[in-house]
Amino acid sequence: MSDTVTDPQEQYEWITKNLQEVLNPQIIKNVLEVEKRPLRVYWGTAPTGKPHCGYFVPMTKLAHFLKAGCEVTVLLADLHAFLDNMKAPLEVVNYRAKYYELVVKSILKSINVPIEKLRFVVGSEYQLSAEYTMDIFRLSNIVSQNDAKRAGADVVKQVANPLLSGLIYPLMQALDEQHLGVDAQFGGVDQRKIFVLAEENLQSLGYSKRAHLMNPMVPGLAQGGKMSASDPNSKIDILEEPKVVKKKIASAFCAPGNVEENGLLSFVEFVVAPIYELKHGKGKFEFEIQRPEKFGGDVTYHSFDELKEAFRTEKLSPVDLKTGVSDAINELLAPIIKDFKESPEFQEAQAKGYPAPVEEKKKVKKVKDRGSRYPGAKPKDDSTAPVAQTAEQLEHTKLE
Ligand SMILES: N[C@@H](Cc1ccc(O)cc1)C(=O)O
Image 1 (tube, protein in one colour):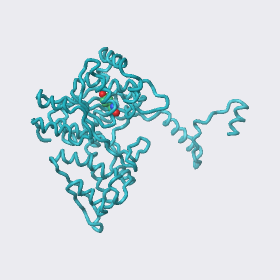
Image 2: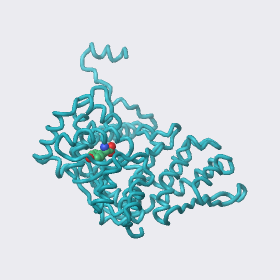
Image 3: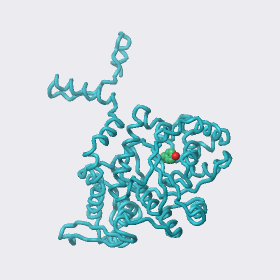
Image 4: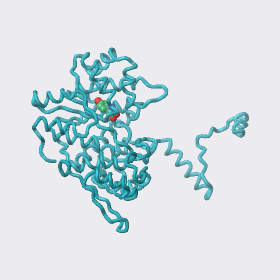
């Protein structure tokens, strides 16, 4: 990556590049133009599930911030992962935070971002202090249940009987801005309601209002563009093997000529293009697709619009677009998979951060054992069926 820019105008352009929305841009401009110092900005991530390909998107923004000379902090929000319906139980949360840290560093390295310029902070390192705790209490005395609930609506998992932790979550995210000593917080536009909560309340605690920078949400690969945890094909793990990438992309929704609802084109637009630009310079774009001779042979597009137009007019078929996108993803993932395979620390963080559920293991073993005792018999999994103890229960079991 080339050197950082120093002209305030240019810095502002890098900071806000590709964003969907900026709240309080004057706070940023004031830092750059009047105070003439580096902008301090942070991005928080809660180590919950496994990071997927969408993770490249905030990474390119971190690169832009560094390019603009910002002081960038990455918050590994371990307690937030716990507070969000215990998505990360306390026994595993520090391994998951480590795993996220290594993924973030590996991605940044792969797109030539100097990681030594970033500050990594683990949430629980400061969020358990007396001062921070007192701030949660102070904030809980000025924010209503309703407002806290609404603030978390797009971030905290919504369940039938919501836990109190889901209300504490947004309060803490607001307080992080103060306790990390930043001028601005960056996140996806799904964080908007929490950002507004912070803007509306920090001043009542005697703290200053921060600016907020928001990325658009990147559509997934399924029809409708949602990335859903329940549809594994809509997401590609950051360590996905090339073959699996091909398979998932092959099953992605992609109708001939349809450029509106097309997760593959979105992936090129929001992930591949910004990374290419970072590596090769402003405005540069190149997307190569290997294609059999009889369908026109290999083809290279020099702008995203050119690619999109070729697909719209059906000069490029879904099969060929899929080949191009799979190859591009595999190229992006290769250095991260390599880092993982070469690092025992990385592997340990994954193994201990995401242990196989104990129940499942037991079940599998039982089924296997039975299978070997009765060769050829189809194992029937009744491990959860109740065992009848009395005549009455036996009768009941029979009836079922
Ligand atoms: N809410 C963020 C995580 C986060 C947590 C705490 C923060 O201070 C900032 C961000 C997410 O959805 O991933």
